[in-house]
Length: 226
Image (cartoon, rainbow, N blue to C red; front, side, top):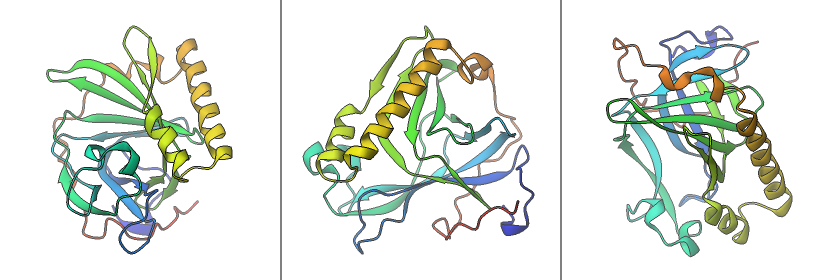
């Protein structure tokens, strides 16, 4: 990453940051970035940005102030208990993330050990903001899991409902998110891009090194020069 003097498109092998802004306030009452994942650019075109999050990547994730992982907190207090962030590592298999400009979702591909393809995951989110060193977004709680046999199911509907109950998402926004999910379902049912593009057969360049998490991972985003 080289700051504000980048070209408009990244090149394969470039390292960027994939970040999400937090919904729940931290101890200081701020709603800053609370998820940051360094990734390697696979492809960056007008149609799609594809990035690879390698196994073992050091990331930032939200936790409760006592260090408890957020998803171990009972749902009724998951979004109201005080939070902070911590550095950790991605211990699963790598994840390929695909994002088309303007789509209110990104699509993630997961594999089992040995590169046996597991599933696609439609992460409903705010359309990403592109900046000098990465992409910023905001997660919308609701997701869709898509399987190799083209079946699908909603994921995290309980979290979606709880986010509305505690006021992290108003009814108008919730309707927009559900509508975005239904639009994604139309793509799934038609088996459109990127599901039909063969990304499940993609493999990372063995020469790529795992990106490092910078000390200033939460720095203010500087917009890409056009």
